[in-house]
Image 1: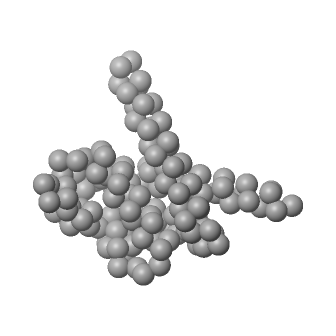
Image 2: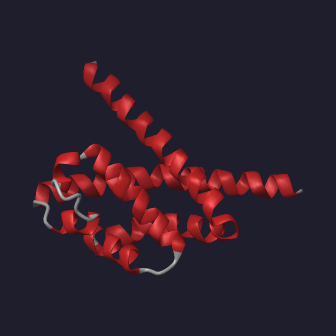
Amino acid sequence: MGTKVQRVGIENGRAAFAFQEVKQAKEGLKENFENYRSYVKKMPSLIQVNGLGQALAFCFQKKGREYRSIYRSIAKWMKEQFPGQFGKEDMELVEVVVNLSSADYRLWTMETLALLDWMRKFADGMVKDDAEAAK
């Protein structure tokens, strides 16, 4: 029973974090929020096809603010969840990911996909809110 309560707490924390990140992205990106939403929706496929490391490297190298915003959100969440993995010098997310063990890599992939699922839901909701407000 304790495990189930803990899982709900983790999921709620992830949802609250995702909501705040998407809300900040919407405020910061304004007219580019639709692109952000599209990219958030594409990220799980990128991860599943290419792997977490490749997908994060793709986001890291992109010049657009939308992908960089997604990357920063994932990095921020992972630093909260796994602070010991980032070392004393506050390593870059992609640097940490490419040095993970296979077991940790799978765990981080699942955690990132779970976060992106919440981000997608909130981004969809915020776009729909805008569409309804425009009517």
